[in-house]
Image (cartoon, rainbow, N blue to C red):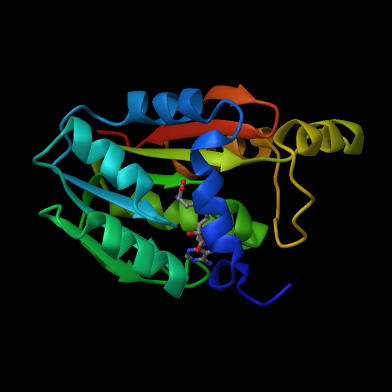
Length: 206
Ligand SMILES: C[S@@+](CC[C@H](N)C(=O)[O-])C[C@H]1O[C@@H](n2cnc3c(N)ncnc32)[C@H](O)[C@@H]1O
């Protein structure tokens, strides 16, 4: 597997299948429900082709958004898909590195991206996200999380009809919720879950 699998055909294969994963529509809806209805600014981490930014903009046409991604293939896809949407900016950034200062956001969202990072970096990123939120702003992470055991992991792979991806660094929900609470997020919970797909969220206290 190359250092960045997202700069191979893996990117286009994912995009072609993105709508068809089991329970994807439910997961998207659970994420969207936690985003304020009319956020002024939103940041999307690991934006892919800008899927979540576009969902938010469909609902809130005045929201301004920034999408970050490291993959040149995904950056090209995002710029193509978001080209005619005013107020959406797509920037290259590796989430393994500290978040750049992009100002404060009403919502920071991420969808199926943070599980690619080392655990230590996940926690540091959660702290940086808290610092990038306005008071009362929300972080919503639709994420691929770890199963409690190998048997359930294999059942999940069979259910989504995909081979195991050795570049994933899956982590259980409980650890991630505990981190968010320790870091000072309020209203932390796992709001939706199907097997290894979960929506985790917390709010920056007002
Ligand atoms: C499964 S795709 C999800 C894309 C989009 N968020 C969605 O829900 O359709 C994972 C995305 O995370 C991005 N990604 C993976 N590792 C990253 C990193 N270290 N920094 C920035 N983006 C990363 C990939 O390039 C890819 O676009």
